[in-house]
Structures are given as C-alpha cells and as structure tokens.
Amino acid sequence: MGRFLAVLASGCVGGRIGELGTGVGIGAAWIAGAMPADCELITVEINDDYAGVARELLAGDPRVQIITGDAFSVVSERGPFDLLFCDGGGGGADLVGLLRLGGRIVMDDVTPQLALPPGSPLLADDPKRRLFFGDPRLTSTEVVLPDLRNSLLVGTRTS
Ligand SMILES: C[S@@+](CC[C@H](N)C(=O)[O-])C[C@H]1O[C@@H](n2cnc3c(N)ncnc32)[C@H](O)[C@@H]1O
Image (cartoon, rainbow, N blue to C red; front, side):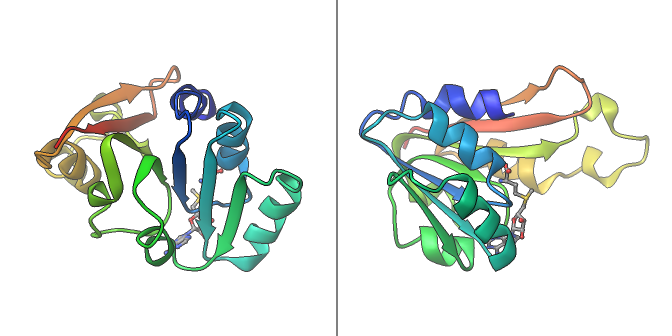
C-alpha cells in the first residue's frame, strides 16, 4: 500500500495531497518520501497522541502539515487536491468534490470479493465500492494486493 501511494504521490508535481486519518504517520511517510519537492501534504488525525507520533516521524519536512482534528472538516477547506488518501473519517461526505479534475482518490482496507466469506453483506453492497464505482465523476478500479486478501480502490476524477 505504501508503495502504491508513493507511485501516485511521485506524480503530483506542484500539487497538494490530502490524507484523512494520519494514524502514526506511516502512510504519510511513504507519501512524503516520494512526492516532488514542490508538493505539499496535509494530513489530519483526530487522535492527538497519534498525531504527535506522526509529527515526530515527519519533523523537519516543511512540506508536511499534520493537523489534529476532524479530517473532513479540515480538508474540505484546503482543496482542491491532486491526491486524497481516505483512511479515516469523511464517511458519507463528498470526497470526490475535493479533487481537482484529474486528481485521484484512494482507499484501502478493502477485502477482495473472492476472499469474502459466503454470506458477507459486503458481497451485495460495499459502501466503499459504491463510492468508487457509483460516482459518475470517477473512473475507478480495484487493485488486489499481493497477499490476495486485501485490495485498494483508486479513482481518477474526470468530471
Ligand atoms: C487506518 S488508521 C490510518 C493509518 C494511516 N493512514 C497510515 O497509512 O499509516 C485510521 C486513523 O483514522 C483516524 N480517524 C478516525 N476518524 C477520524 C476523523 N473523523 N478525522 C480524523 N482522523 C480520524 C483514527 O484515529 C486512526 O488513527
């Protein structure tokens, strides 16, 4: 997942990247380590202890802002974004509307359909897949990760 974020972040020349849910900063470190020098990362974490660990991890990188607060409230005032990694908070909000045209949205922690147990309600309706494949502004795909047990969703805003 980190390498996938790095691939996308590395193309954000002069861009702005947002992360909803910093955790302790692992995804942010992958993004910051790959993004061009003229790119900025705004990452938001609701838990101040976690945000503090992330601040230590990324201390000294002036391109990175780690903000404690509700992720959607913060990023909704900082767009448009070239890349949004949605990993905590923002459920039900118009995340696609925060992307510039051509911008990308990513979510992970998705279970591939073939790895779901029989009877899983996610076989019939998965809110994450509904967001990516139901929004006409997005061209999306699901990428199954090498362990075959996890996948991610990525979409590009085209309108
Ligand atoms: C899966 S972890 C994030 C991991 C991180 N993105 C990474 O790749 O290393 C999800 C995080 O989202 C945070 N979170 C949950 N709801 C949130 C909200 N409304 N606003 C900001 N952060 C939130 C949780 O506290 C948790 O640390």
